[in-house]
Length: 281
Image 1 (cartoon, rainbow, N blue to C red):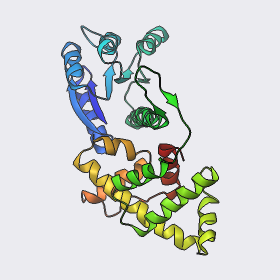
Image 2 (image 1 turned 90 degrees about the vertical axis):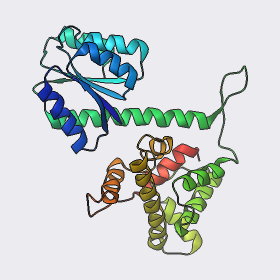
Image 3 (image 1 turned 135 degrees about the vertical axis):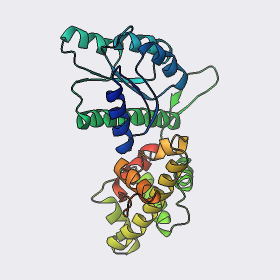
């Protein structure tokens, strides 16, 4: 996630930059104490999220939001200010901010809000991808929704290949589970789906889960490595948050960077739920 910071106090700018970096929220692509300069920089750099003060000299925060939204409506804004006037806060929300946080800065609160806004952006991206899978565009005609078809399983294999899982023995189990769900037109159930599949093989469900967990772990590691190489790649944006938990990805990236002795813990349930959502099984 790409952040931009605008505050007339250099100390506030430094504190926010340090927090974003230390909490692994993303990258700060720019910062300013001048609202006039910030408008042009934000338009040029196109960050995902702008954190800004309301009470800025020359151009206040609401004016900045209005001007940026005219040309870049996709950018999200989080406003931080000492203002308690309800009308001004209301004007800020009408301008299009996502959250208003009262000063003095509570970095824990700001971190929580920024994570929430980032997750919202990721979800919006994921929903756009799902809609593209669920619909087909015909020339001169609107998109037409469709039911899951025979091309569902190639989509499953494509995703598994994209995250480097095709060589794992547990990946075959994942594909067979997807086939089973598709055949039965059933949704993934954390309490019964894998047990049902294991019983159909005559195997211990624990052994089946271990194979699948190893495969999902491989996908988690490969996705984390991709994030280190190119945090803004389409594949990382698409799969890091739909197939894996954010904390697991972050921990695995820390392990690969040598910043931690422990990697991320894969969630089989999260993986299957995300896979089902992406492929409309």
